[in-house]
Structure formats: C-alpha cells, structure tokens
Length: 285
Image (cartoon, rainbow, N blue to C red; front, side):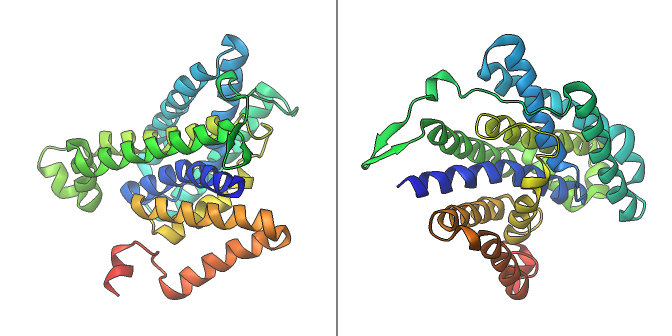
C-alpha cells in the first residue's frame, strides 16, 4: 500500500511540473529549459515565506504567485521579441534563464541546504490497510488531483480556455477576431511558471532545498511531456501516473533498475508513437 501511495504522490508532483511545461509548449511553441529552475525558485521562495511567517500554507498560496509574476516579466521582456525568429533564440534564452536564476538563488540564499518543515496538520502518519502512510503524501495526492481537475476545467470548459486554444491553433485569426494574443501568451507563460513553482512548494517538505535541485526532476518532467504528447494536458496526467507508479515500484522492488525503466518507457513511446500517446497525430496514425 505504501508503494501505491508513494507512486501516486510522485505522479501528481510530476504532473504539476509537466502540466506547466506542456502548457507553455502547446500555446507558445517554446520548450522552456528553465522550467526546473522555476521549480527550484518556488521551493526557495516558499522557504523564505515560511521563515518569515512560520506558515507553510502562506508559502503555498504566495510563492507560486511570486514566480508567476516573474515568469510574466520574463515573457514580456525577453521572449515576446523573438517569437517570430528561429527557435534557437528561444532555446538560448530559456537556457540563459537557468544561469540567471541559479546565480540569483546562490547570491540570495547561499549554498547551504534549506528545509521546509512538514505542516503540523500532516506531520503524523496514518494507518491504512495495515501500513503507516505519511499523511503529507496523501495531501499531495489530493491536492494534485484537485489542481488537475481545475486545470482541465479551465482549459477545456471555460471561455478563457477557449481563447487560449484559439490563440494556440491560429494566433493570426484570433488576433483578427479581437483576442489580445500577446496578453494571452503572457498569461500562459505565467501560469506555466506558477505551476512549476507550485511543484517546488509541494516538494519542499519532502526534499532538501538546494541549488540545482531542478536538474534532478526536469528529466522526468520532459519524459512525462514526451510520453503524454507535447502540449496535451490529458496526456500529461496519464504519463505522470505511468511514470510515477513505475518509479515507485522500481524503488521498492528493483532500485538499481529505476533509471533504466524510465528510459525504456521513453524509448518504447518514441518508437511506437513518436508524437506521444495522446497527441492528435499519434491517434490518427
């Protein structure tokens, strides 16, 4: 039972990260290499807010907003002028974001490990089916499921989601119909950055907060996006569940095979459905 809970909590944590990454790619066509750095920044900002206020919940509420505002500024100042240029400019810019964010974090918080304590509400384990389950992992599962539902409703059932999809599929036509495409792009990049930070906040009580922590999760994040299909939120949910459960089972029964299992899933997907399991192109094939 504990393996299932760990797998599900890891799955929803991966989804929080992958959703922001695939959202940015689906709308802007930008593969944001700095996504892991934004995840790290969210954890550090949460640590600072908890240090000031003593409340994890204030950090959970405000750290993603701070990083989302930074993401909006990054999009307006740097990305917006290069949308019509070759993609190499976007790749170089987002790689540059990594260097700037990492150096800023080093200057502000130093090189020492930071730690956010587990919220008191979820500090005690819960007995479930004969196993002692960390209650904070149950919180991650419930919170991640709630965010996934809200994100699905926002993108598939709301007027804003319709505008985002229209601007994504045909930005020139949307602009002709009165949609402020530039503002929509900024909002999407901010939302994706906020989701990355949200993942960092949720992970903060589980892992040491350190410089470079984004690199440890960004590979799994890209694997989720590739398996689910670039730009596909539903695919990201399924792929995150698949990868999270596979890694949890691997850590429990064959820890030395975990990384191999991850890349086998990726290779099989690329060989059978290069566009991802849930991409339109993959379904039409």
